[in-house]
Each structure stands twice: as C-alpha cells, then as structure tokens.
Image (cartoon, rainbow, N blue to C red; front, top):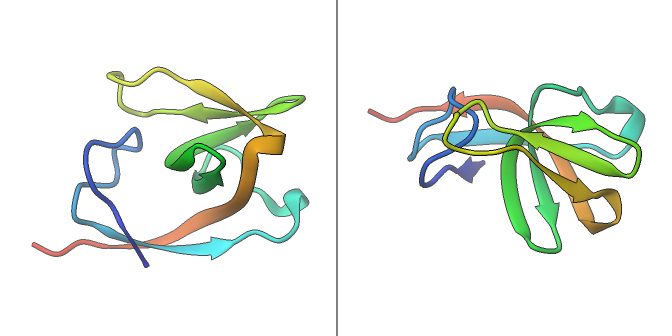
Length: 88
C-alpha cells in the first residue's frame, strides 16, 4: 500500500488515502488512461498515463495541474493502481 499525500492530479484519490498497486513487468500490459504510479529518476508520481513515441504523457484530472511528459528512459518502475482504502 502507498499512502497518498497532498493534492493530486487524479481526482478519485484524496490526501490520506492508501492505494494498492501492482507492479507491471511487461510494458504490453499497461492499461493506458488508468491511474498508475511511476517511479522515475526525479521522484514518484501518481497520474493517468498515455503512451507517446519516446515519452509517457502524465495527465491530471485536476485542472490546477498541467499535463507533462516523462522520457521512457527515466522511468524505473510502473505500477497500476488496483484499489483504494479511505479512512474517515
């Protein structure tokens, strides 16, 4: 489980939520458009992702955040979000 903190670009998650993730071993199994956690050379992000030629487009549901691209070579691990625990 990964604890979510701060404001997020994926509106279905709130600060304090815990998300369950599954590491993706095969790039052919990436479910484009679904929320993923990316472990990158610059840190960890939780975004909806889309495939581009040499980059991954990271999309925010929240209009406060602009989309951005990460070079595929800068991505160390990719995990898909498979569940959420929200404590009230």
